[in-house]
Image: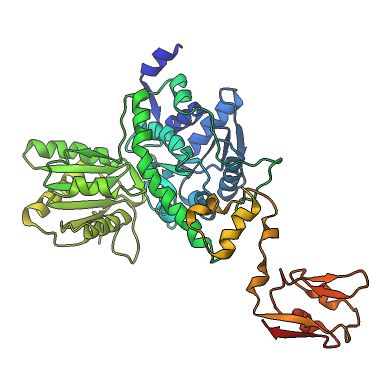
Length: 398
Length: 102
């Protein structure tokens, strides 16, 4: 198959396979993982690529996710391009090393097939697994469809290895809704992928002739300064992201931004969300626009670092906002995205009525008619200038 | 980057986050030789060599290897690293070591 044809070819592929394909085309050196539903297919495909000689990489199946991520940290410090993938309990087991990876400024990419956390045991979609990693210093990107999960994987490697960033990046894709759904995908050519991601140039790497120490202790006299380095690096990731996305647009024709937005510019009521529900809301918004309701949708691609400036610019003229969360802070004010938006509005002097809709926990379906109902509620809030409640657990039998 | 250039600003407290190596990574070996931890001390041991019986208990117990054993088994305090914990004073069977205010 010639490259030019491959570049334009449209294929049907499920989300997990699309991520595996992107990882293969990114020429990774080391993959360490432990299988967990619903990301298993990602590493299964990668193990096949390595076994049949399509990908020249070390594939290491660890004895746990904690070990898998530890292996990734070590491999990245040695200068390798590294990938891992997990979900739910696996990510929770990685938690300790998640923080070590970002604080040790280790470039790598992890796909997270967002799945609920125990208990009760449930394997379906929720963002409650990644939210405990929110404050770690990782860059967190969210895909709304299979094409985005594929594209963001390349962008994630580029951003992660950027000399001004040097941070691990997660690519989040909704369990089953994206991981196991077959959607159309237009891949980039292997040639373009290699041009976009030439072999990694590590800033520092393990070198036996020039010994160095990684992962040292830092006492109260320097610890805060190292954490300030992390804060600055996380914020720089947001600053260099448009340049990385632009470079990807040049080879793919697909332009990424801090968020997807649909008719938000002139909307009276805007609904914000993470992940695949953006697509459902978009369709619902298109219908409501036809009947004259000025509603808009924003789906955040980048959740960390948080694109405050760009969101304020987009939301400042809205008359009402509904923030949808597929996760919850139990005992807190609401869902994590809601709390972030509240804080952002307050410190930018915006007094827009906001309501939180908590939905889809443990994979509960969120249908098109429900998306329309949420948009109508948002529009009603804009018309009346207020909402009557702060947080609603959508269609919970309460 | 030399060991001295990394350690000195930290000891003197004259640095910003930009002066520190990325992520507490130490790019050269043996920086600890430049890090004179004895400055942490608030009391320091003084040895009365007239009373010392050369049993070497202080040399064994010192948690920082700051008691040096000499050729004739007499001992000497390395004040660049002694942190003044006073273990040597406690274990000395003949009370030849006394802790003094710095």
